[in-house]
Image (cartoon, rainbow, N blue to C red; front, side, top):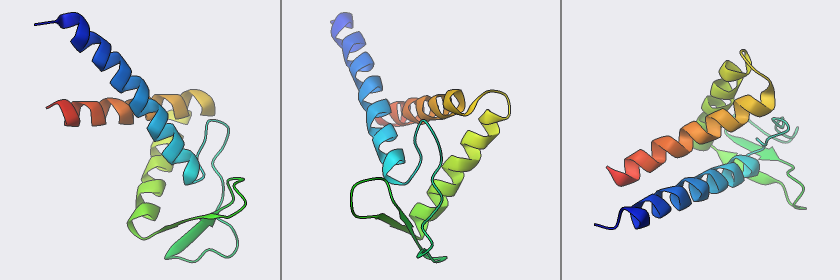
Length: 104
């Protein structure tokens, strides 16, 4: 068995997951610098965010719940560090969880 190939894959997969999760968080208004508030046109069922793409991004129902859970986890970690560190920690935690789910 080629352990180097497995190690290289694990490193690549971790970096790719972190990158993709950071991108997805950015789409829903959560980035390394801040958490965006929904635009005033948002409702309880649909939220809009201006992420600088010209057209606001839209999330609804279950995605709103997922976003709120992510924000809650970041704020929990922020209580013991600064926001940027908390954001990075939670993103890595999510990547680690997904890596384990995919490999198991």
